[in-house]
Every structure is written in structure tokens, then in C-alpha cells.
Image (tube, rainbow, N blue to C red; front, top):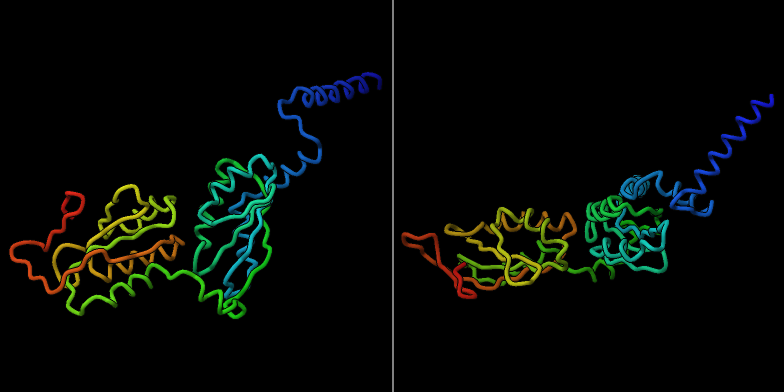
Length: 255
């Protein structure tokens, strides 16, 4: 029995020694909190919240409470496209089912935090449905890219044939994804602006069709990529002869 007691004491001593030599000595409460937060990633928590939202939900107000307040500045930066608010280790932002920031965008941003890794607890603060959303709030939302595109085309002459358009993005964070979604338009960067320019043709010639441009802009809307669309130049009733269409010059280069 004495030998058994000695062996038990040796094990306890080894455990105590392991804690004593740890490079990350944390109070018991902090250690427990980190274990709770790490049990599910932030993307998983967001998916769980979405599954509990009512059918036809419109907006979800979210609060992320970080395990370590020292991560708050980095977390807020990574969540930048969602326009978060920060107070201490609590970061507040929202998701909109059919607008911006979209559920898919929120998932991608939270995946960036998981990759760091930045641990925390994501909770639903409030939600609305399409029926309960205030009409004034809907009216205050900026127009979608598709709506802006239709508005630009509506003011062109009926016989427009060629145009040069610009999509200015609200954030440079959208550049990589925007370039991929707009690839069929052969978009080009311009200057230091966060955006792209492209050509479109109504009947024939060089440039994407207006329908293709609308589909690409719809993809941006679906993923919560926000910005503005404007037609820079337009020509009417051009008739190319042994050429693909008119040429514009900007900054000493043809487009």
C-alpha cells in the first residue's frame, strides 16, 4: 500500500510540474473559457445560428465575444467588409439574407478568423423577417449592382450600340472575388481605384452583351459584393467595317 501511495504522489507531482513549466499559464477560468470557445469554430457557430432562424428571415444582428481581448483589433479588421462595431472584446455586426453583408460573405469572413485562429462565441442578438422589416429600412438600402446597371441602361438612347462601363467597389477586399465573378466581361483594373472597367455591345462587336454583364453583376450581388456601376461612354448605331468595333482612348491606351 505504501508503494501505491508513493506512485500516486509521483503522478501528482508530474502533473504539477507540467503546469508549472507551461509557457502559457492561465487562470483556471480563462483556460476553461478558451476550451469552450474552441469546441466549435466560428463558421460552425454561424451555420448553427442560421439553421435556427425562422423561414424567410431578413436580417440577423450578431455579436462575437472574443476569448482574448488582445485579438479584438485583428478580428475587427478581418470583419471589415461587414462594417463591424467594437467595444472591448465584443464585436457587433449583421447579416442580410438577400442583401449586404450576405450570409455567404459572413461565413467567408468568419473563416478568416478561424484560420488565425481567433476564438470566440458568436451569438444571435436579434433577427427580423421580411414581414416585420420596416419599409423605411428597405428604402434606405443602397441599390444593388443589377438595379444600378438597369438604371444606367434605361437612360441610354434606344439605338445605343457600344459602351464602356465602370464598377467601383466599396472595399478593396472585394477585388479578388470580384475579378473572378466578372471574368466573362474581361474586366480591367484602372489606376489605384478598387474596381474594374469593361466594354459591352448591344448587338455585335467587341464587348460582352448587356445580358451577360447583368448576370455577372447579379453574382456580385448574391455574394454581398457592394459598389456602384456607371456608364462612362456610350455610342449609338455604330456600324463596324472590317473591325470589331470602335476604339476609345484613356490614359494614352486604347480600350
